[in-house]
Image (cartoon, rainbow, N blue to C red; front, side, top):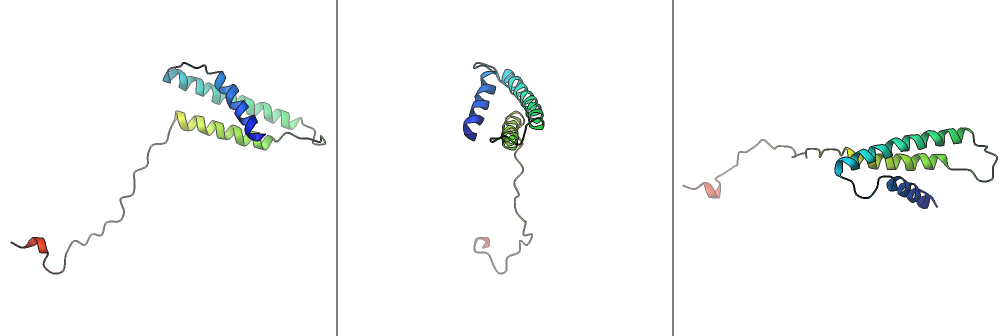
Length: 107
């Protein structure tokens, strides 16, 4: 059920963006979705504060918050991808002297 609700939320958010957009438009639309996620989170916070804990079934606001965070992170990761970190070349030995004659060094 959790997966179905997350998919439904994602489909609703994606439907608002349209199907044929340029990269610049796509970034704008994704930014708008991120703003809407903030609005949804505000509404969820209001709903949570007015909920009655004596009901038989309760809405899982913590799970909703986690899903919204995950969607937000996905959008932010797409809009501003992290740069590749320089790889660690390893430690340099620093000792280049060979003991004894090297076979390829013969004159």
